[in-house]
Length: 87
Image (cartoon, rainbow, N blue to C red; front, side):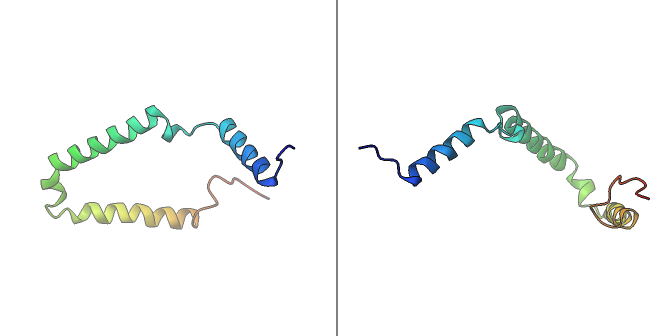
């Protein structure tokens, strides 16, 4: 007698879907190496320039916040990027 429970059929379907799914770039060997390398570079850059970062460069903070605020006002929030003329 053959055991054909719905649970076993479902598990085989899920297993086949996982085999056919393409691996994400960020989970590939190169993607993980890139993330680690960029993290190390960011740490070294921050370490070398910590004097400039913590020296009270408040102007840089206001400049970056200004970019975010301008982005929100120019686009009216997300979802309307590059929509073109809809009339």
